Image (cartoon, rainbow, N blue to C red; front, top):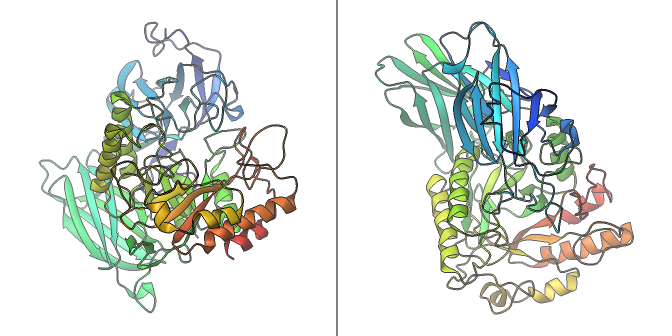
Length: 586
């Protein structure tokens, strides 16, 4: 079942309009290793001869190029003819993800630029278009091997090493266009309040100045039955309204909550009227769910939640960070749930909105994690902060996301254990995140030395279940830095202490089969039986520790040289899925 607003392949499934064009597909393409394109005005005279299949980066085979050598500048061109009937509307060009610095020209005119490889962005290109004629869109993308730009698992040297893979340069998510009225709904922030049985809508409107006859209507439905409709005067750019959602459509208890067992979603339509004319219409959805922490336990909708997560890096053989299709995203989610996991820790990648949509629909929990920098200086702080503050609002409305993870394993904050500057940086990101979203837990340094963090997350790749049980039998010793939890890291940075947070083992396992190439954690196993025995022992050991609130296994699939997935990179299972599920649900 899908939401009422669902349109297959629509790139922004939580904010849907009807009037749009998909610009994925073939674009003209050129490398610019000498950085001569701007001085030679390639935005006017584009070099002919090469094409690329968007949204796949040139490093992937899916792009039609498949060259893994790093190129610091690349260019794209798309010739488009717009359909009739767009007069009087604004034309918005959307990019869901371009790595790293994007500069746009339309018909030779510079439009603007955006920095950041993971956040979505858009440009109003209306002033630069030619009506009734072909239009030329030209995009220059600048990338680097700098460790001060958020790059996630992308390598910054010429070859793969350890757990770092081929870089991604250029367009790697969908490109699309929509026609909108100049007076319109720019964004809606949706905040459920389960305890009060209310949903809060925070609207941001455009073009409402000096207009006195605007009306905003919100219509909520559930399972096709109308729930509530509210109407208010749109007299300013920012408007907030709360709506009760108790209704007969919610069943005997008159309410319908979102959870992995019952991922109920409310449909909602927002219509902006000018007089009697509907000038903007947006379809969306929301889930009524609450994530909270009490007495050292994580609660979902005020009940205990044991998290069975799996690390998901979201790589594919032919297309790397870009999913080959929407169907491939759905397949991954279904394989994950077939193995008995109720959620994913999306690792070092801000995933496509379609993935989050299907996690909303199918009831899969998500930890959303920022791509790391790998140096600490003022530039890294600025770049990281700016992009994180774009990402959090863009993902805020997804009920599946229950935890924010801005930092992982001290990447980009390498001396956080003792460096006050790096500690304060994580504190600032924690509090900035809470300023936008005070309702979800924030993990400030997943797996290693924590500062201010809502959950104490520990990474431990010990192989034997018996050794794990012995190490974690004394909670006080672990959480109060009396012993290192993984024989080389302590739970908290200097100056910080345990405050009763829930404890989760957020990385473990990583078991690999014996192979001539590639690596996993610890000794490689020789047979399926050996794999299952080790997997069962370590998983059951974690499950047996009463103060541990959940775990995250490494990982869903093999990724390039890292061959420790439960599935091969082509999604072929290495061991029977039902065996993994039985252990997880044991």
